[in-house]
Image 1 (cartoon, rainbow, N blue to C red):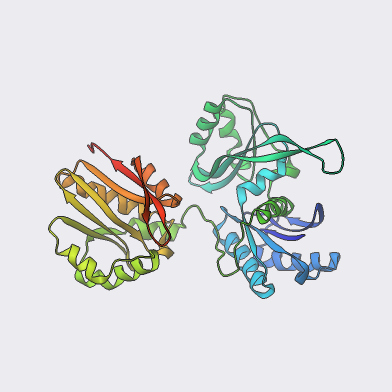
Image 2 (spheres, rainbow, N blue to C red):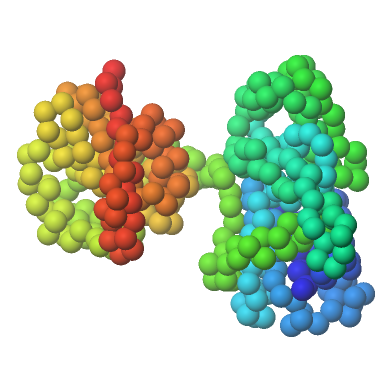
Amino acid sequence: MKILALDSSGNVASIALLEDDVLKAEYTIDYKKTHSQTLLPMLDELKRMTELDLESIDAIAIAAGPGSFTGLRIGAATAKGLALALEKPIVPVPTTEGLAYNLYGHNGVICPIMDARREQVYTGLYGFISASEECDTCDSKEDHYEFVCIKETSAMGIEELCGILNERGEEVIFLGDGVAVYREKIAGLMKVPYLFAPAHLCRQHAGSVAVRGMELFAAGKTQTGAEHSPLYYRTSQAERERREKAIIRPMRDTDLDTVAEMENASYPDPWTVKGFEEELSNTAAMCVVIEDTTGVVGYSVSILTGEDADLVKITVAEKERCKGYGRKLLDETVAELHNRGIQNVTLEVRASNEPAITLYERAGFMSEGVRPNFYEKPVEDAVIYWLRDMK
C-alpha cells in the first residue's frame, strides 16, 4: 500500500510517501516562498530520490482544510490533477486531524490551533486511547492507540476555546501555527495544566497526513479527483461581504425557473414549477428567497396554520452552501414567521442529513420524534424538529 500525501494548508509546504508501515520520504519546508513555487518541485525531488513511479501509488492523501484559502486551493488543484491523470482516489484528511497525528499516542487532550484571523482559530479536540490486539500468530498482545475525535473541526474565538478546555478539566497540549499568535493569550486564559508542542512537532507534516490518510482509505473514505474540493470551514472575506449584502424578499413569479432549478439539483423528488406557483397563490403560504449580488441563491416555503408553521422547504444552491446563507435564510424566515404571529415552527429532515440537522439545532430547533420510512428515493426516516414558544 502506497500513499502519497500533500499538505499546503498553512505556511508549511509538505509532501510525503508512505509505503505500508514505512515513511519512505518526507519533504517539508516552512519558508516565505509560495506553495505554487514549492509544491511541484518538491514532488519532483521526492520522485527522483525514491525512484517513485506515480502509477504505483494507491491513493493521494491531502490536508483538505481548514487553512489558508490560497494554500488549500493550490493543494487541491495539485491533488485533483494527479488523481485525474493517474485515476487514483483522493483521501481528504481534515488538517486538524493531520496535526493531531503528529502527537500519536499522547496521553491528554490534543488541541491543534490554526490562526483564522480576527481573534479566531480553526481547531478541534482529539485524543488517543490505548488499546490492545491479540496477535494472530502468537499468544502476545500488540499495543496500539485508537484515534478519538472529542470535538470536530470548527472556527471559534480563542477565549471560547480556552473556556471549553477549562470546563473539561484535563491537561491539554497545543500545536499549530496559532501557538505563535496566541501563546500569551492562552497563558492568561488557561486554568488547567497545558503545554505547547516542541518545534519539530508543532507544524504540519505530510507524513502525519499520510498515516491518517491510510486509516481513512482503509475505511473507504475516499473521493474521486472530480469530487474533491477543499474544506474551508469559513468563507473568504469577499464571500462574507457578498453574504452580508444578501437580502430576504418575497418570492416572485420571475424567480420560479431559478428556484425550480435549485430544487431539481437538490432533491430526488423535486417540486415542479407548478407546485411553487400553487404555493405563491396560497394565502396560507409564505414563500421567500435569499438574493445576493449574483442573484437568487436560496429559498424557503412555509405553511401557516394558526399559531404554527410548517417549514416545508428551505434550500440553498449547492455551490453556495457552507457560506452562511442557510443560517441567514433560516433565521430571517423564522423572524418573519414570528412577525406574522407564529409561535411554533416545525420541519422534517432526513435522518442522515447531518449538515441540515446541525443548522437546525444551532438555531434552537429540538428533535421531538421520528417518522419511520417517511422519505422515498431512498427510503429513510424523517426526524421531526420544533422551535416552540418563540419570543
